[in-house]
Image 1 (cartoon, helix red, strand yellow):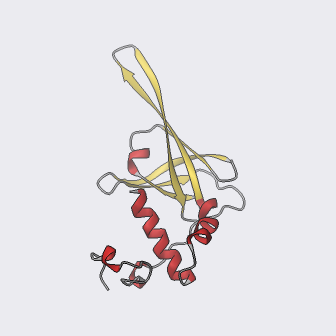
Image 2: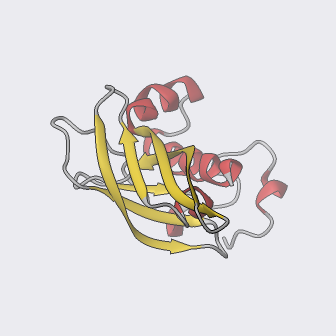
Length: 143
């Protein structure tokens, strides 16, 4: 899943920058990556209730605080907290989730000032060979 998201962002970035090196990609996107802390109540037997915590990551994709993450990070949780690059902690909620695709969309309850987000590209503009030295890696892509 992480490889798919990285390839997606590399493709989008390459289209918009004519293939500059990946250090520019990291520099331009690092502030859009967030940590997602999760917690849920888990019943253990009749009288034992445990609090389970987890952690994941996601990418902010809109100025309104929408974040793409993996559905397995957020599927069964009771509470979500997003930690931005600047360290702000913001509660969030699940908007949509597709376990089959292992993708989810969550949204911050409030939006921090100066929030950075990854701008999405148009996948219809990607052509085999635009990004990779080995276009056979994109055999499934439609020219």
